[in-house]
Amino acid sequence: MIAKRLLSLGHQSIAMISGVVSHNERAKYRLKGITAQLLESGIELSSERIIEQPFTIEGGRAGLRIAMELNPKPTAIVCSTDLTCIGALAEARSKGIDVPKELSVSGFDDIEFAAAYVPALTTVRVATSKIGISSANNIVALIEGRPLARRERIQIELVVRDSTAPRP
Image 1 (tube, one colour):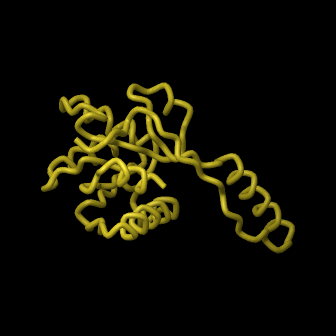
Image 2: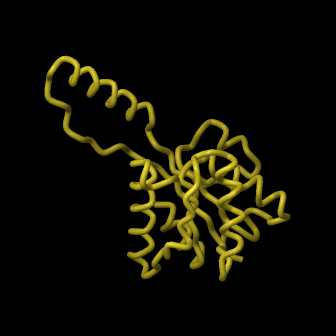
């Protein structure tokens, strides 16, 4: 979803600030989705362009510093969470990088602050309340010895705001 959006804006040099994949299922699935979308368009996300960092503001800042050392520099960065994205945006600002004119940055989750941040974050909205309810129901089922509910797909939606633009 977000990868296709960035490709439609002309971005070819893309990096991802991901969570630590070996320790986090959410990071693993988000990375898998992004790499699959890019591969559909003939772009392989090399291991050096997958920057594993904690899901924190500082993780986003550190990830942006690493990404901007890549050759060629990315014109777009996908962050695994909005919190990481906010860190990447703060670091870009401190380095004088104009988002989105020089670099597009996007996140996941559509946290409340995503719309209020400047620039407002382009993000993937995830129905986190539905995930929480489903998880709670499964915990109760486990405690009561009932079978778990079948896995259900959670709806996601691309929310386009101000942190992405056509490739410079």
